[in-house]
Length: 164
Length: 124
Image 1: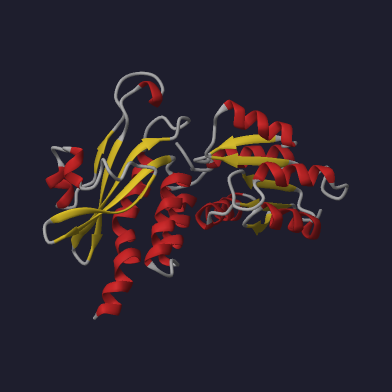
Image 2: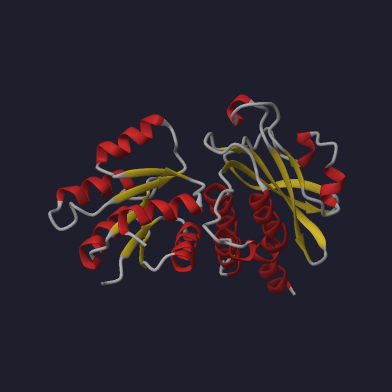
């Protein structure tokens, strides 16, 4: 349990409420990226993030925070065997493995399809949790799902409307 | 009895939205907000909150500096201050307590833990 207060149901999770409001109130693509950074660092406790935009069958690093952009220029750099399923819209979480706290274990890897207009328009990758955060729990995964469903509109809805 | 008031300080709009949501849904405390240390010191003087819940890493005046400033001023010296940050390293926590904070929590915040902590200072 990460953010639930006593007697709090899933629908009342203040993290979901705050994240949804922040994304919906973002005023530009830059503000939407800042909203994603705030949600991932403050609410999920992850400090390495990359957003890969999918265009014409290619995935390029569109924006990042805390990761080495030279090492992770495209999604292919992760050599992730389940990447095709992510591109089809499936959330893929490789939890930290082994015993003990996260820093003693393999790093978490989270691949979030950012859905927009019925397709995966981008993939958000989260690579490293803060030392005090052990793993993702069910409440975290609900928040990640919300990002998958809502971040696309905040990021790409405006520009596509403006381009139309 | 007058309504208790919490001053939330964070440069992240998302963190402020979540803090406000927790207070509104699970406590009876009123809430005022500030987005950096300088604004926090000013709001603490104007609003006389019963508790300050403040981020550490902020542009301009950070949480440690704001905490020290509030401890220097007679009008804000006695207000309980809880620092809340992604930085959980021991040296950061030590710096927090040296700046005069009463408690130190790490992000991501545990809502239940936060509510209990606030109630320990302010009552239900």
